[in-house]
Image (cartoon, rainbow, N blue to C red; front, side, top):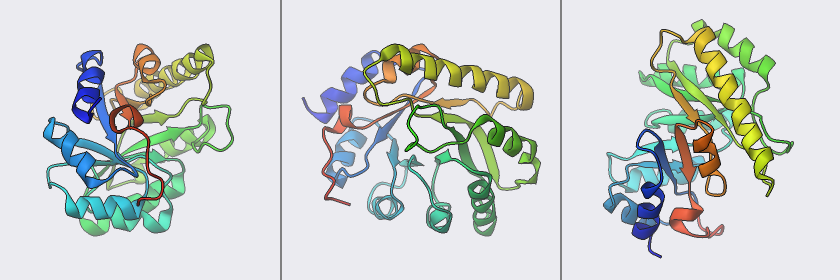
Length: 223
């Protein structure tokens, strides 16, 4: 199937209120242009150098999302143009984004990444770190907190995956009620990728990050 066919198949059963992020990391610019021609405008990248290169080469109306682990010393390169950073996993990173955004005169949208999987290799805050960041959010002048993000365990056990997503949805609802009840900008729950996005949507996801199902297997030798 073509990229066009793949996108059409995904959108045929994706609720209208769920945002599709086309994860284009390691895929060539030609593939992104094909998805762009289908009307897609939101693309996700996980490596700063690759994102900057594609931003410079591709249409200006693309909304670039950064979805990978972000090092503090790389923040300055993407802050001038990034639309949303999904992977804010520490207060230290959040303050660096705020500082760099202030230097460029931008307000940068961010999601707080939670560690919900049973895999130590995945990044993310625990609930204590989350609460501490939320209590200090008033110190941030150039960051807008828009929601939470999480990645489930990579497993064939669908009930485990569903349980992890369900737990993140409960946490999102609690944070919304406790800290952002009057702030409509806090509305994003980013969970679900190619293998599990249908479960994520059933459990309340408002944003899914899909790459392989759209673009096919990645060429990890291409950056």
